Image 1 (cartoon, rainbow, N blue to C red):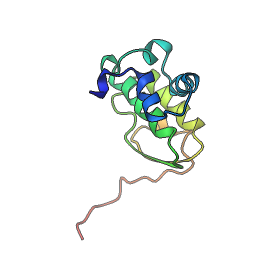
Image 2 (image 1 turned 60 degrees about the vertical axis):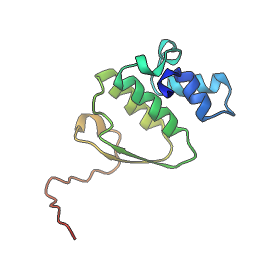
Image 3 (image 1 turned 45 degrees about the horizontal axis):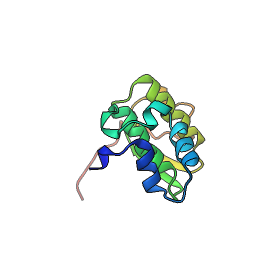
Image 4 (image 1 turned 90 degrees about the vertical axis):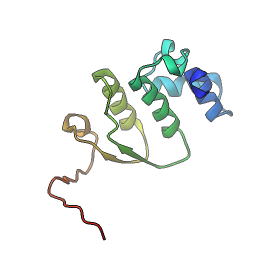
Length: 121
């Protein structure tokens, strides 16, 4: 399966026109070290696997990311790497997040949904 691939193989398969340097640089920008980049995805932590997925998302021809609780299951270092990657992202980010420490300094607008109610229509 796909988990047998290394991070480098996964990104290269997703972006076949890229050079090895471009693949490595994109993964590094998402906070993965050389050790991680050359490791099989299945041996990485959940947070490290999330960085690979984020790398794929952020480098597609899209100008918006929709993220639902992107900090779930991430340790402090992974959260810092994710925040930096999102700060570097040139497009729009729409995110649901319950961690002010994460989104402060990142979000240009915050909508507090605590008073909202849901109804079926």
